[in-house]
Length: 202
View 1 (cartoon, one colour):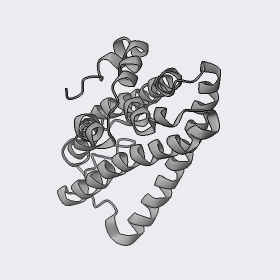
View 2: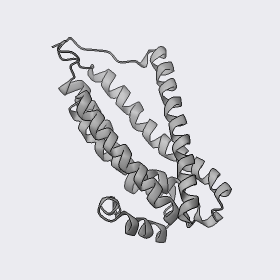
View 3: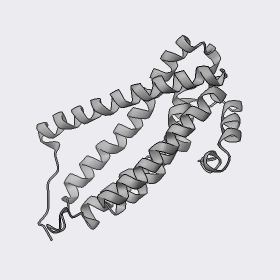
């Protein structure tokens, strides 16, 4: 079933992680039934927000991106999210050996994809790109994603909670490094001419 675990991760996360563990999914199936769809939410919302709604800083008028610029940036954003989930998942599997995870319990891509669910859903607020609203909702989503990571890792990987805590902390460190790398890559891409193009201020 498409998006079958999404609601359960909010209503009863422990039980839902156990259900996810009991049903092994290939990365391809997981992407088709969960990640590809949910990653569309922030990408589409951001496109509408930056090209139709616009934003204002310091009362200087409404700023919007051109349709072509907004589309190209949001498409890049979409594929960056998909790539980020996959790469982080592979890092998780790589580190799993260090924390004594059995080979058959390597479920890194699943862990990364399901833990990122709150952030995908919270991306809907980008349709109205107010800085304070986006920051507030974003921080709440990140906090719940971190909770899901710490809660779900020992269940999914079948390791003791204390070892899972150390493992999850290592994953957070890798995630922060990936975020910094993504920011650096964005600067390089903008330097190649794929940066934002603005319409007339309103």
